[in-house]
Image 1 (spheres, rainbow, N blue to C red):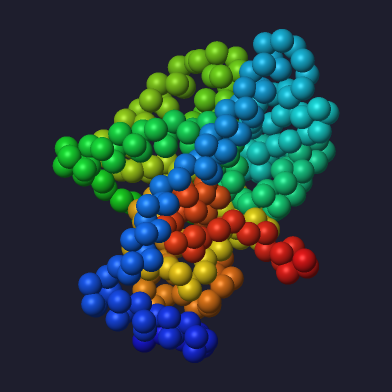
Image 2 (tube, helix red, strand yellow):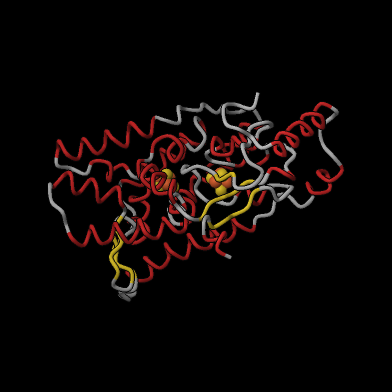
Length: 308
Ligand code: SF4
Ligand code: SF4
């Protein structure tokens, strides 16, 4: 019943009590009281503010020739420090068969930063497509609630195939083909230098996400997100789950872009009392932390928290 891993007795006891609660009609008084505190937008507000400020910095630096941040989110210099999107750097290396020192320095800097703040934190805290896609998701959810559209989920593993395919294309053709399709690159350049024809592609993607499949690009396609996911496996800042107060209402999973990382919040799934950390696909968006009525999900800095 509890899977192959040895699950501590105290955790089994909690799981069994929850099963009894659920069987007896579900929610306890505590849970109902806590529900009133759920639905905060604290992390979402912080995240949107950060994302807008970062993207505005690029725009202002270019418009006023301030040389604070030069370039775009694909490759930039921040007060003289090189930054490069790791997936773009890999494509360039494979397409041109060269190791460009500034690109290597920029990539290592970015990898170091996201090893600390969380791999896919780039997605939800920096990428402009994430913001517009989140807004499109709200429309999609309203339409699905009214039964006007139906969500068609895709296989979560498609993105790994595409990650490899675009690298092979770069190597074989000598072109960084994915960069032409990346809504992140298109939007970042559009904000800084003005929109081009690529903006139509972004609009098309948003329409697909509204009418066909919820958040399909970030969830099932984008190889940039996959690269940050690999970094995220090892990153320090992660959402952690504590089972002791959880009532398994599943609100966190309904809010999450990648709900499979929260599978341990389902009844009987958590292997530990504390220290259940989410996987690399998590974007550190904080939606689950905001929505959880029992404070069972929190941000945590792994390893470092044990030092103090
Ligand atoms: S998955 Fe790609 S497009 Fe989506 S937020 Fe991450 S980098 Fe941006
Ligand atoms: S687990 Fe939480 S923080 Fe991570 S992506 Fe899902 S909702 Fe966002």
